[in-house]
Amino acid sequence: MIYMKASALPLPETVERIGTLIRGMMAFWKDAHGWAPIDAAELLSKSMLEWQSSLAEQLSGWCGPLSDGQLILAWTNLGALVEGQMKLLLSVYYQEYLVDTLAIKNGRTGNTVDPDGVTLEPLIVFFKKRIWSQQEDWEPWVRTVQRRRNAIHAFKENSIGSAEELHAALRTLLEFVRFINGRLPYPDGYYAPTEC
Image 1 (cartoon, rainbow, N blue to C red):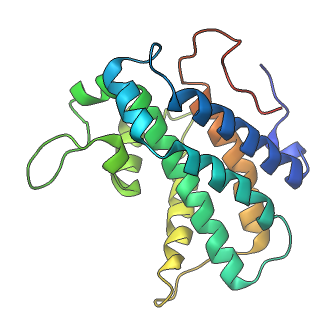
Image 2: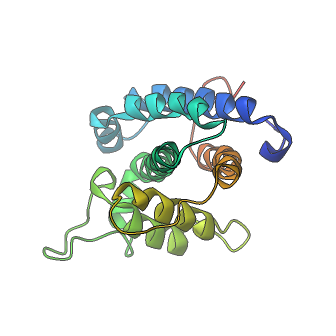
Image 3: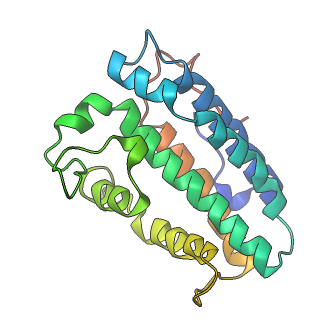
């Protein structure tokens, strides 16, 4: 399905589309038994995918003018969704991830870390090496979200940008969720979640 570019949509419609798409994705993958391999289905069923849906519902609160505190919370909200999307992709392709020579390892044990236990930094490194192409380089945007999300540790000075920059990042989030969803295997077009 071809969608209108997020930059051409009004911001409230953009966040509504994000919420609809994420809700559909999470509902499908939460109950993937019979479709996903057993290990992946087990991992997905124990993950808190419903929290991703709930976090996506909160995006509408970030569409207007924002105080510094609201801006910090908005970047945190956005960062949690970005991280969740990346973990979802690795969880769906769990078997392939486990045998990947570049899979994320525990520094002490050397064991592969399950996607649900990985933090954003190693996810970015793995995605840069294995998922993102040069034409689809999401790293600069994800790193901006990561830096601004870290302002939640509000003691040390950290740039939180402006409401306009957050709004632009929300539009990019729709494109990012489309990117992730487009790489997930669905039984047929009927089951694939849509944003409208």
